[in-house]
Image (tube, rainbow over all chains, first blue to last red; front, top):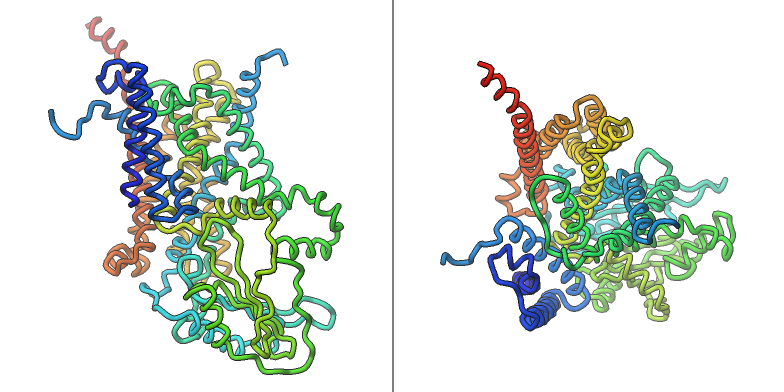
Length: 94
Length: 530
């Protein structure tokens, strides 16, 4: 559950980064269209909510909410480091 | 106000942050260590058995009460805390004798007991993680009240720095994931912003609730206006505020009466709160007709609100189950914020998250201090003020971690029977810190950074080795026994050591590169001349 919460939050931040042109450029993608941006941001928001749900599933709502903030911080930090040092990394070789 | 709003905010952020940043760095670092206080306490008492025996709380409590019956039968108060998880891994006792005829406070004793035999357990005299934790709101070598005032003032500035930081960093969402590694002060600015923004909820919570902890200190006149200035009147406030109403326990009747057996009471407590949920049992006037037994429960939720059961100490009847106590909304809110600050409810994963968030806060302050010099180097280098800030930054950002490592070294290396040993451990911290400050003052700034990072790398990286050479509680033993609390201290020190080594290596390579760049033209000219 904790690992799930982390990856949901990481996916959320990734979606949000994909909605920003600076990071798209670093990752080698074309510019975002307004429609795409809306979809990506909404998806990010939904994924963050899902991460909260996963935290609550493990810790219960009161402690889970506290942990959610920590999970969001750590996953965002992981994404920042990935974007800074390996912007074009792919999960699988092309 | 000739300048714009944002400029004045920027001014406040820069200068408030700089002038108090050194104290705030200390507060954040020692406070972060406070989240692993119990683990450090354990590490710093290597005499404790490697694997703690599992005993029922009721059995441990019986041993504790039996010990106090033998040691101080005529007491005003006995307090026994059974071993119960991380918060209180030990069987602890405290007892206070009745006041002397002249009104002076009676003798007090406290210590640890072996949970299986009930005999006194002897550990080396150490401040443990507890002392570092206490430093983050009381500092050290200062009267408690002075330390609290200084920290309270700095916390207020910290809060202002957070708010102004958000205002001046208007691109907070645009730059949300931005970190551009590379030369110049741009990467320090990115790092400072990121460390601030990514755990902003933590920073705001910790700073605001930190202010709330100390508000009784610096808003004392507000309390005094209602309750009065004297110590006794102050005590009434403390009782009403923190102890759930005035202490209604009567004094001794002077008539001897045997204490009721504890077992049925503890069964009743367990029925209400579940197993192993007792924080301590507080027995007033033991052996007297007016004996009262108060049981407190352990904290497992973010709210600090505690349960309390009060029993008659002779008949064993329940006097107060805490149900009648009303909790006004502001008190619930304040208890929740203070509970969030302490994070006592956190299990291992959440505790790591707290620890990392604390480290990020510390790093945010450190990077802010360094940023001040990076931005002004071109303009101010060579001036006394600039050199002073640069040296103080180094002495704080590298020197204090070295001091903390020295504290752990001292725990292992000072003779076990040294008088006031715990005080010497703390002295070791500040002596090492002072030595680093002197070093920072004497060496050329660029070299000093490499050297101090190198010293810090050795100071942390060698701790597992020092531990292995001086005790048999080393990584080999703790990992083999699956004692992760113990192993985590060694391993975390090792990781810090490697981190400092990486930084030292990076600065060293960069400086060598810079020197090579500068020397290049002259060698080219020489070659050309030949």
